[in-house]
Every structure is written in structure tokens, then in C-alpha cells.
Image (tube, rainbow, N blue to C red; front, side, top):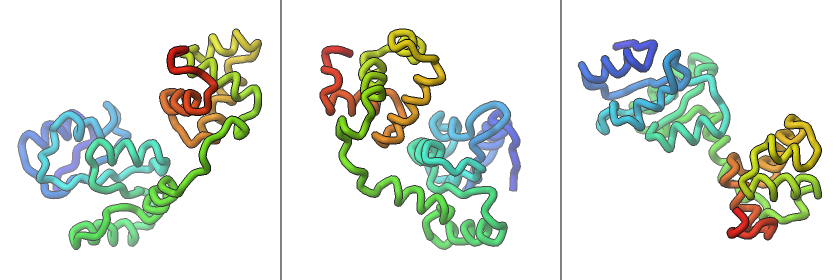
Length: 183
């Protein structure tokens, strides 16, 4: 067993030795552990399971998109964590139960977005942001504080089930709030 507390130490260990199973933390002092997956430092023959405290969708899906084959929460009870690791060796899905539930929830059908899902102010904010305006500029145009505008944007993301400006812009175009030529 080899332990590396930083990305640099992990890179050195991976260059010196091959590993069948790699438990990878996301929050390392010198960067995000998933950088090892996207940089090609981890050989394809290794099974990589992210072990982290982050239980949100963004971290989960980013790690899986980067190439992690599993995602376990460090705050799971030790017995459950160990059982999950043993399950990985036995070929069972390498996910904490809580993360498996999050994945299932994310694939549930969300109601189709419609303009009526948003308040008139949220539609204004979405239209301006979708046209490429920053939160600051949108705030100035609408006479709002940046915090208020950011709050509207957060509500918009939640209601539309998106997590980026690009996703919100696509929905805004689909809803007819902006034309693709407006962007």
C-alpha cells in the first residue's frame, strides 16, 4: 500500500509503480485528484475509486466523467465503507449507497421546462445572462445588487435542473426567451 497526500506525490507513485486499485481523494492540497485521471497519469488497467467528503452531484458526475469507476464517501460508517471496497473486489458497483441514490434521482424525469416555471424577474435575468451578460452587468441593467442577481440565477438553475450558464442558455433558447442569434 502506498499513500500520497498530494497530486505531486501521487504522480511520482504512479510513475514508479502500477496499482490495481487506486483510492483517490478529490480535495488534495495542490489540486483536484481527478486531474490524475484526465492527465493520463493513471493506467487504464487500474480501478480508480474516488473517496471523498463531497456528496453533491457536481463532484460525483465530474469524477465519473473524468474516468473514476466508483465514488465512496469518507463519512460512510467504516463497516459500510469496507463492505463497499470488498464489493468492488467482488465486482459489485463501487458507489456509496447515498451516491447511488443521488445518481438515480438525477436520472428521474424532470418536468419539461416552461416559461411559467420562472417568475417574470427570473425570466429577465435568464434572458440577459443567456445573451452573455455577466452577473454584474445584469445587476446594473436591472437595478439589482449582484447578490440578488446571483440568488435569482441560483433559483433559475434549480428550477430548470441545470448547473451552468451554458445549460441555462440552452433552456432559454428552447423557451424562446432569447434567439440563438441574440447570444
